[in-house]
Image 1 (cartoon, rainbow, N blue to C red):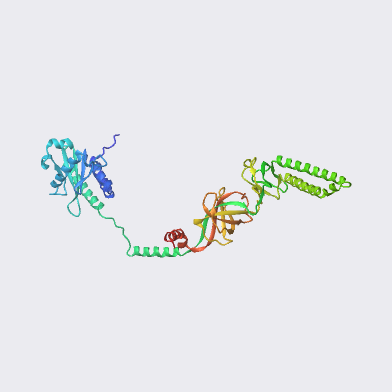
Image 2 (image 1 turned 90 degrees about the horizontal axis):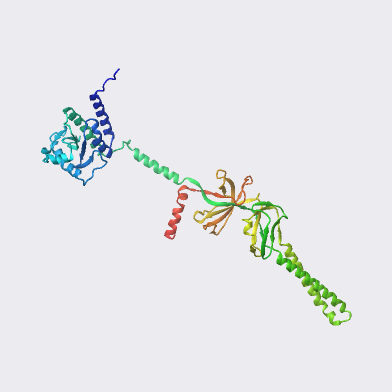
Length: 443
């Protein structure tokens, strides 16, 4: 069974209705593009051009017409002349022939199809909002001219509406009421007290570290513990090179033996020789000096093995950086720290510095677990700023973490937030601009 044939008149009518709906909803470049390109859904054609505001507004088939091109110059000659032909009756399309506008037939056919119609786009306020020139190879039928007249009226309304300023309908007094409410809300929020706070880099440090220093000038021979490992009191930590110390101890021991032998010999001669008896005090003093030197060298040799003075965790960088390195007396090599009594060192930049009282609440967000902050309280704050490891001028503050905070090893870094007293919100927000203004104004 064959399907019923589609009625071309109904299809054209439905296309007209859809085109008018789209024209009323379009604005700007979208509307001009629709006029020159989508009108063929109602009446077929090959070329079209839109005349609006005394100039060429759009051309079919291209996004924008070339102003200096020969085709554009041709249209700027034809469109004003065609618009004059339509001035007599702006509500009906008018056929355009070359002779009616004073143009040669050959010149017309070089740029435009032989059959052309100028569709005026009437402005509801009077006159024409524009005009549409369309052309094709076949003549236009009266029914098609009627369709073009209908769609031209819709285009005129759409162009006129697109040129009107859009207004938003408001209830009387609503705008002023909203403005007053916004000002009052802003004023109330500006003087609302908020807790001041500062964010600064922080690091877990020992609360009471015990430094392990070099006992004498020497060379580190070995380090017997690994960094951040627990040690017990009496464990061997560091060994120093003992070749020179051992040689000095042996030499001083031999010198003591010689001094004692000389004293014994002089003691025997003192019974018969008065001169030898007079040397006995000098030889006794020489023995005492040799004893002191021998005892000192023996003590230094014993101190070449550095033992842990207490229980704790050995905190230092890398053992290989110390082995074979000469050190001076008192130079710190490592630190023994109690892992239970840990503190938090906070480097507050000078630009963020605010006066905080001891006991202020502190939150520490470690880098390895920022979603599990540790709590503590501020203990002290440095009175003088200094350059930290990152080269930033900062004040050093120390906080004590709560006893229940576990799993925070020494050396762990993160971000600390220090809470201060309550201040008006506006002053807290403008603290930096006010500081810059005071510096700039030298107040």
